[in-house]
Image (cartoon, rainbow, N blue to C red; front, side, top):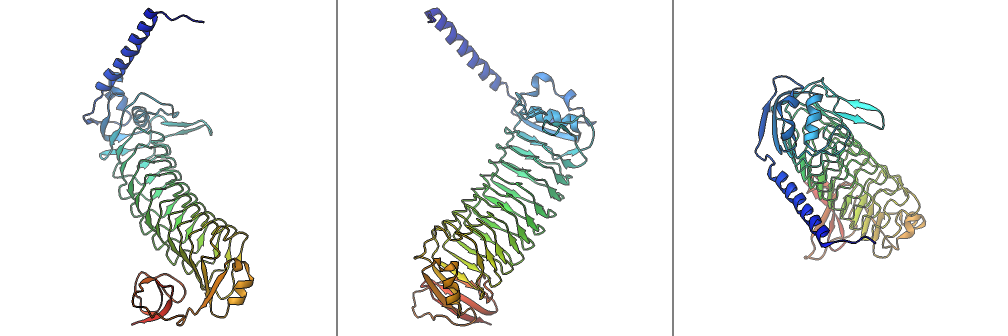
Length: 422
């Protein structure tokens, strides 16, 4: 057994204390005031900053053209080198508002898996540009950029503030993957699609503004965005891919427009905070596991054109109390579509004259099946204390308020009434 002497212990303590003091001294030497560097020529950033000061700068502004050589140094200052290895850099605030990205210089990132060297391109935030620079907290991008590449900000977990300038027309897959510190983001007009896993695991994101031009939401686009509570999808969106909002447990409100014709499997899997849902009139099928585990969902409406419901589609939506189905022909329903739902507590409303067909189908899982007339009065409201709960068009589309024509109104006592709006 090794013997420790008092002298040895004392020396150990002294060295530990000196080590702590050394770290404290290094931290005290950090340069917190913004440093502005003007580049007369792209690729010259390494000559503007002394090696001894490179890792001490925390706030940097660059003016002028920058290429791959400059970007490589920026990554090192921000804590990651071209191979994703950690550096001693402490850069947390970066202002590129007066910079211009140009092609040329060295490669700034090396993809070991595919033996791929990544270089800068004119007016583009390239692939892996800031990948895993977790120490960055604030970034201002050049005003002239037109695109953001794949994995550009992936793993930037410390990033809390980011403004995307107008003119950006495309954002690559996984671009903001794992940006858990990002709380809000506005996407500029011109972007037409949200690609695969673009905002996946941005768990701190609570506010997101999508431009009207977006037409599709890709695979896992918002997977794991548990902080997102409300989202309005632009009217131009026609499809929501699989896993798009998987495990967005904080989502309570979602507006789906009539133009959406397809929703992929597990698109809303685990969205336990979602309380109400009206599917667009154009939806004809619901994939497997699409709303699995949406335990907060109390009511939803299936439009007249629905033809099929996948396996486990609404499994463990344990909070359901009512389902309105406007399809006169019973939709094909997969196994365990309503497994774990309260078969006695939930009432299934079906079009008048279809009771037997629904009772003999897989919908017979529900013990309470009630016919209603989508084009007429099913039950009249007699109580003066009831309140309007929701309002629908004749084809089952939810309305935000009284709309000219015939409206179907649901009240707090469970009654349904047809209302003519002039």
